[in-house]
Length: 148
Image (cartoon, rainbow, N blue to C red):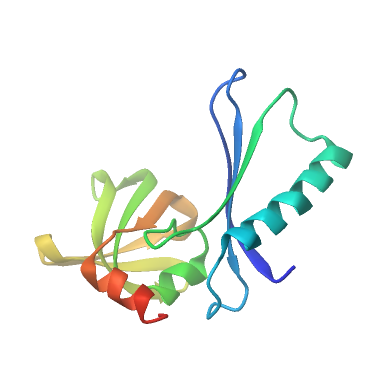
């Protein structure tokens, strides 16, 4: 359909289950619209009606990844190099699991992060990450408004 899936996540318990799907245009110069989300939602609903992979009732929520989006693919870390991000690891790295700093890109399968407040840099194994997301800053907002 011309979109890439950014993240799929099920939240809530059995009573209030939500299937959240975040998407973006494959052509990164295009902006996601409400109509795009509706089109994706209808396509997913049709698939879910046939396949029925989720037991019980649930709500489907389709959205854009947003400006302060989750970083879910290795390519996201290269694409957003120069912007600030928060990263949580599955395992301890240098005695900690949470990192905040400026993305410097990717080297092999590792994310290069400048921990500006600590005047240090770290390489974090992509496979050991539990989650990462961009931090909403004036710089990020300006880049989004400029179409970057």
